[in-house]
Image 1 (cartoon, one colour):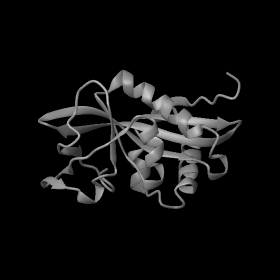
Image 2 (spheres, one colour):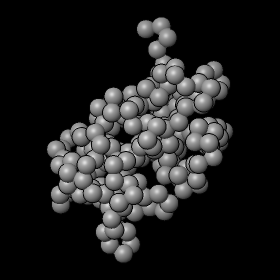
Image 3 (cartoon, helix red, strand yellow):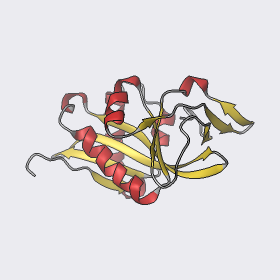
Length: 180
C-alpha cells in the first residue's frame, strides 16, 4: 500500500559503525539527553528495527534477549529497548512500523515480550495489545532478589507462548544501570 512505512531489521553485529552512531545520536535527541551509556548498551546485542527516510535515520528500536523469572519458571523474553523517533518525524507511523517489526520477531522467537515504558508512551503500547504488569517487580541482583518498587506499574508484557499471572511477581535478570 502506498504510504506504508516498513522498518528494516538487523542484528547489532550486522550494523556498521556509522549506523550505530546514527542510532545513538537519534536516541540522544529523542530522549532529550536522557539516554545514558548504560541505556545504549542495553539496546545492543539483539535485533534492531530501523526506519530510514532516504539516508537519514528517522526511527530506531531494539529487541534483546533477557531472562525473566515468573512462578518458578525462567522465561525466554524479548525485551524492547531504545524505541525512539526523531522529534521532527513523529506522527508518521514510524513508531508503529518499528514495533510491528519487533513484534514479528517476538512472536517467532520468545515466550514473552516485555518492556518498561515512560508515561508518555503508555497509551501507544496499550493500543498495541501490551498489558501493564500488575504484580510486584524485582531484580535478581548479585545479592539475591531485590524489589524494584519504583518500577511497579511501568513494566508491560506481551504474553506469547506461555500464560502469565499478571498479579504475580516478575523478576528480571541483573544488568548495570536501569535494570528494567
